[in-house]
Figure 1: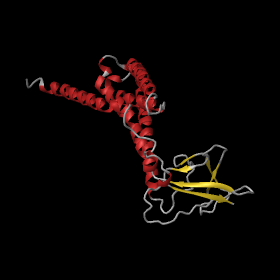
Figure 2: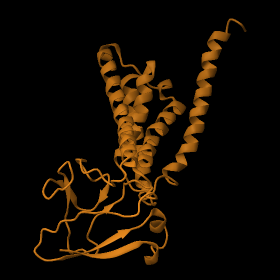
Figure 3: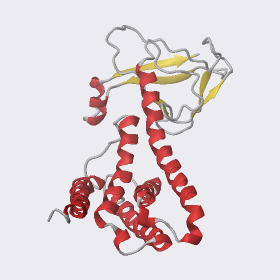
Figure 4: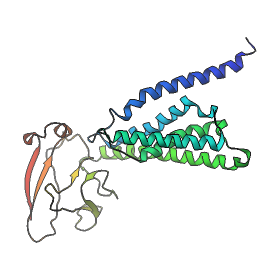
Length: 267
């Protein structure tokens, strides 16, 4: 028995890892269809949630261990095709629920399986193809780093948002879309802040045409007034409505008396 022990332990550890991967996969699988971020959740939670695709398909690959059957290009090809079909099926099924289809999730699925294959020695290619092994691993590492880096950038962005007060928005942002809804663009005309930046709001004839700032500091308890500088380029007054509400209001029945609503006439 003592002579077989060194060979037995790696096999047992592999089985334990496989069982743990199965358990993790089973726990994560329902989250493709229930739970998850809603429209009112912050961008950091949404970005971190997307990384779950990578984790799930990495665990799925560890649980199935396809390298026991195939190696080399065959392993990579079959693994990629299988995950592509499974991921597409999941996205189509999600379309029938409250979740939205996101085809970038299919790429995240592939990154999950590719990460495990890139780390497996038996997933290496044939001798003739060995020169492409490390470039392939570097590509997979770059894709994984890009996904994790995107979430890290969102985390940094949200930290800066939390530090903005007394300002609610940093006009130096080159892209307002992570913070605003509606047709809005950065401009330099009519800017009054120190950085000579402003935002142009484009209105239409739609019933509720306008913009809304949805990604902003949350705790206003130390402040008693809100100052907004607006400029009307037209030669006649522009009637507007300023509305302020919290998430509880949006998640509730949108009662008019449960929000701040006032009409403005912008000369």
